[in-house]
Image 1 (cartoon, rainbow, N blue to C red):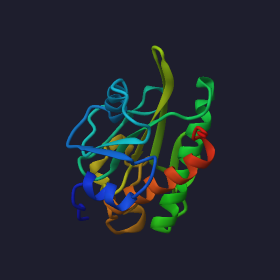
Image 2: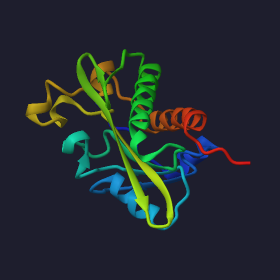
Image 3: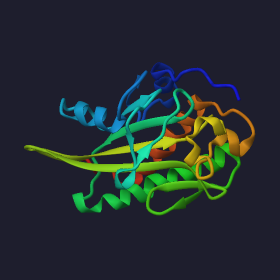
Image 4: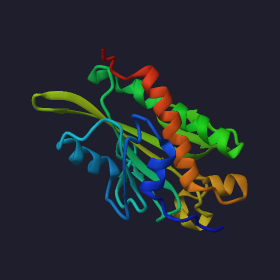
Length: 206
């Protein structure tokens, strides 16, 4: 299975146009955790909608402290800075929204049946293809914010997964039998996340 070209922050921005989610995009060659990178950038008052991708994520996190495995340049690993109009205890609403949106886009782009396994996983054929992690944070004398982390298995082959995960994990390439354009999938995910976020969670300004 061939591997698509590396992600381009410039091309992603150009294709997205006028959006909140994706208003600023950073693509890193490697990061321990894109959630951690976004948390650090948030301290510098970065704007809502900042997205950080990592071609290789070495210490990605899932729910309950699980590790998100990430083969270099074969999946999508990214995090988004959000300032949703919800209270801190309501972060579960963000998790549900994000997982449902990821499943919808995967199904539409790849013509597969993708379902959400609550609260945060997306499955194809009873194997995990994507996951989301929402972390709410509070800053001194500043509004709280959320970091939405998303991981999608895109072009991995079975050998890209550790032996104990091969029966439990799947990629879009395995499910469809063909390579998937990561750049195009990233654009589709960000567009749909932006469209639905604005209607559900964005703060109203006058």
